Length: 100
Image (cartoon, rainbow, N blue to C red; front, side, top):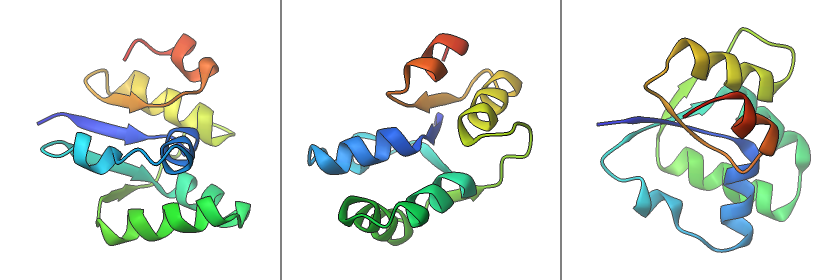
């Protein structure tokens, strides 16, 4: 079982494009950073509200990322410290800074 951490951009894009990423990720441990949930709550858009409901409904493991100033930096640092983790993101900066 692989661990997959979700980025805000990935979640919102999947919701907008009506992609059921939950089904695609079955059998893996999905990690939701508290910072991603906070970003979604701050956005207050229909897609972010739906994303929050879906994430809470599916009871994924919530984690609190500590190292870094921004959510993206925290995800990058977490991925570097945990090389086996997969980062689900569409963010070019994150993709360029990590291998996984």
